[in-house]
Amino acid sequence: MIDHNALRSFVEAAETLNFSVAATRRNTVQSAISSHIAKLESTLDRTLFERGRGRAMALTAEGHAFLVYARRILALSEEAVEAIQTAHSRKIMRLGTTVTLALSVLPGALSEFAAQRPDIQIHVYCDRSDALLARLDADELDLAVMMDQGKRPGRRFVHSQSLVWAGSQSFDLSQYPFVPLAFLSDGRDLRRYAFEALDAAGLQGKIAHLSPHPIVVRAFVQAGLAITVMPKSTVETPLHVVPYEAGLPPISPIAFASYAQPGAVNEDAELLADLLEHALMQ
Image 1 (cartoon, rainbow, N blue to C red):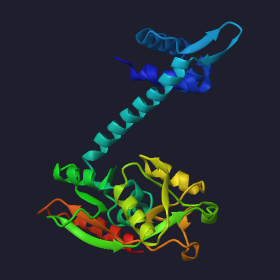
Image 2: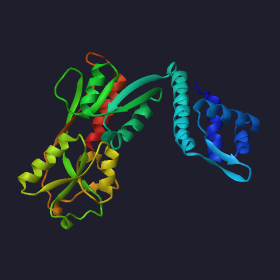
Image 3: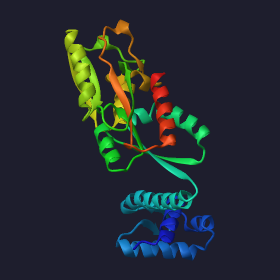
Image 4: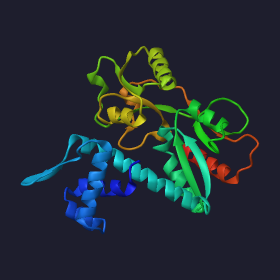
C-alpha cells in the first residue's frame, strides 16, 4: 500500500528537485521528506532520484515514470473526496455525448444551464453514440445527446443538420490529385457520407490520416494535411467550412437526437436537452 502523504512529498521533491524546498512547501522538515522518499523507494524496489555529494539532484527514468502515476493518483483521490463531500448538497445529472459535440455545442449549453440551475452538478461522459445508448439502458446516464439512433422510448428531439467539409485556412485542394481525408478510426458513418458525395461528383477521395480520437483528427485537419466531414454547428475556429468554390460536392445531412430515461420525468434533463437542441440549430 502506497502512502498518499509520501506521494505528496515525492511530487513536491520531483517538481523542485530539492528536499529542503519540498519540506518548506509541505510545512514539514527535510528529514520527513527524505523518509517518505526512502519509504517509496523501498516499496517500489526502485531508485527514484539520482542524488549524491557534488551532484545535482535529478529524477531517474523510473522516477519520471512514477511521477505521472503519482499525480494521477493524487488527482483522483482529491476528485473522489470532492465528489463525496458535495454529493449530499448538490443534485447530479449524468450527461452522455460525443467528443465532437463536447468540443463545440456543449460549452454554450452548459453555461446557460448553470445560470438557470446553479445547484446542479453535471457529470459528462464522452463515447460513441451506440455506446452512449447502451449506458443509458444500463441507467448510467440521465440524458444522452448524439447521432440519432432511431425511434425508441425516451427520444426527446431529432434535429437534422448539414454536413460540411471542414479544413484549415492553409489547406489547398489544388495541390492534390485526390481529396485527402482524415477520419476517426471507427468513424464509419461520416466516411460513408464523404465517399458517397465524392463518388456522385466523380471525385476521388483517399483516407490520408486516421486516429481513434477526434482531437487528433482535428490536429491533422488543422495542420492542413487533410479535410474531414463534420456537422456544420461543430466547425469552430481554427477550422472553417471549405467554401463551395473549392469544388467539393454537397453532403447529405445527418440527424442528432437526445434520449432520456424512458418514462422518467426529469425537468432538469429536459431543460438541458432544450438548450443543446437550440445550440445545434445555431
